Length: 391
Image 1 (cartoon, rainbow, N blue to C red):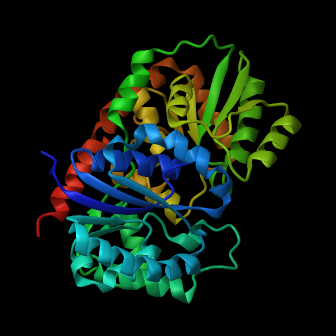
Image 2 (image 1 turned 90 degrees about the vertical axis):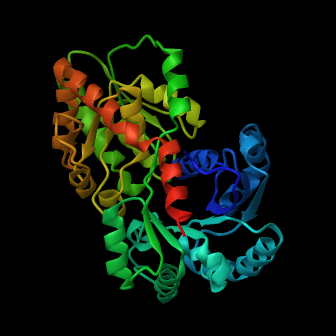
């Protein structure tokens, strides 16, 4: 049984917007705060300040589990986050003297150094490290600043508990930062909100589709490989005996390039922009196949994407780049997912295979629905709290 009646403080990136990271963190916190007193500081990117009033208004309906949510505008730049930690540290120390928190959860590690100078806070802290920051930057001018390395090393050596999305990322971070954790280590992957998934399933959405619908869900960032997906859908359209539509549920800096490529190649494409998570799930549920054509780097190779988990839960077949994390999880090609190389020709071949092979589709749906059960947030949160509170 999940521990209850705890006093929890969480410092996390924005949970107000519709990005995948925000949705993941929001779902996790909703489960973490159930039956507990929960206080949240959420860091708002400066680009969202103009929309802050609207975002807070939309968030109000989900506040029932939280005793306080404090949005703080902070630029998402490593040096700024580290400097911000020295303002945040004394605030958390004073707040903890007044409330006596049982758990202090912080993400990312760059906001945690000053708070961990307090041995009282460090003992009950859980710091999540979801990625190696510099690996996600397309511009390699910033490879790894001295400040970032020092901050990560300090946090890893001081935190009472460190959380990583996978054992692979744990290994990569420790090797890259050249440090050994002082406290406990927890594997905390992305998960699935079981109640929300069941609600979408109960709706039994039926959309009159003309032909096949191939989909992508998530932020349009360079490493997601959506440009290759567009080219692959163009190839599939030439071979299929039905019209093929590419449905992109999301938004991001690559949107204009993706839309221009669709026009150039004559791909039937719909880009929704950012939508509420419930809407994204509803759209995901009607896809004939979800495609995750991400490039290989430390983050994508080490983490299982939340959209893959949600596709499993909703009974949607998945074509995905084969990353090292899938070997660790024991996934089998054409049993759990269909693996492809992050290259246009192979992506197109695998999409066509899934669309036209009904027996394969049934096998993928059946096995995915079994695998996803271990990723429900209630189980992940229970494991985290039980792991942390064994002091």
